[in-house]
Length: 325
Image (tube, rainbow, N blue to C red; front, side, top):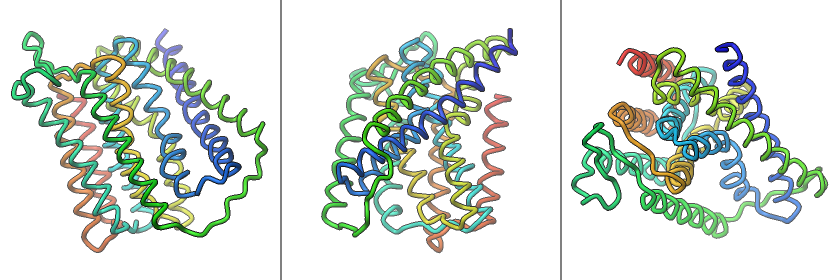
């Protein structure tokens, strides 16, 4: 039975990755057909496509009441993106960091993580309006109002990016070699694969966690988080091998913002998400990792090979801590 669950898990990951890939291709082609600027495609469609696995898993988990997977998947994916995706890229090729990302996107990612951590850790200070402390099981609850607030911040962020791109246009050719009917078919097929993959991953991950006596938080932080981050990892490795690493940091930070604001916002709006002590520790780790990555980025405006090795070692340490705690 456990072998079957592992096969379902692998099949779910394959469906998620392939579905996201097809969705991005179809959506990008559709945007080009209707003359949407490429920069907006990158900021919205591509960001959404690479984060769809996390969205599918977290939303499915929230609907099924598997709250620990919903939250730990977002936190684990963000840690994996920063330490492994950027770390691997830096080991292959030094990763340059745009000054705009350091000034605008990184601070938003860190402030959002810090705000979430502070609110969860000191929920009693908020009078129970947004986060309620369940003293019986020492857990907090990320309520629907918080999810809505996260979504509002996300919408404001996307609107700002769009208007900023309009104020600073870049001349580029946007010609799609995919016809309209095929683009729509790609989008539909991608959505079907993503939904099916998300359900398969959550179902199998819960069963595997129960079989090995693992918590849903641990399985979400490690196996599920790594699996749903495969699109970012594969894309970044291919780009790094080609020496095209200039957008690596922006893609990772943008994906992390997407995870925190949109995915967590959607999942908590659907169903309040429980926060246990382990998730609070994981948010502390994410804060430290974010600050460390920002420090590496600021020094010389690039992430060097040695720093990439340090990041990979930090991920190994964080994973070991999650397993033994």
